[in-house]
Image (cartoon, rainbow, N blue to C red):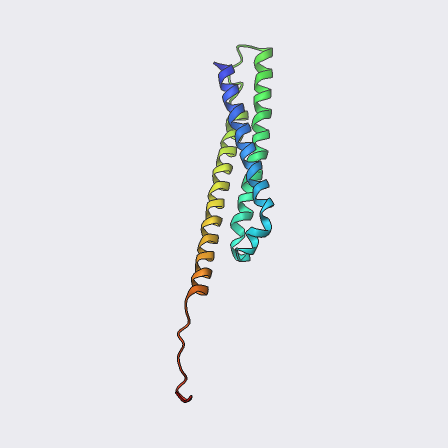
Length: 138
């Protein structure tokens, strides 16, 4: 049972770390396009997203180190109680929470950028009412 727990937690931790790294790398790759299409006052959400994804990676390393410590404790004493208590559960919780917050901020940034682009396009595509000035001869 312990082997399944360690394997599951380890796999989930690594997957969240990989996805977070990929999201940071992908958004940095398209950084010029992203910042061109969004005014600077909306970039706080993207910066918060990067911060939370970075925290996801840090908490992932913390979780993996806790797993390693728990496994070594079980190797030395197979009857050890609580080998994976707070030293794994707490950083794993923080990792999942930071991943979810990073994703929420990414969605906020995307929605705000799309709203800005649609407002910008609708302002450009609206025809101007051409009124003939009253002083000019017809």
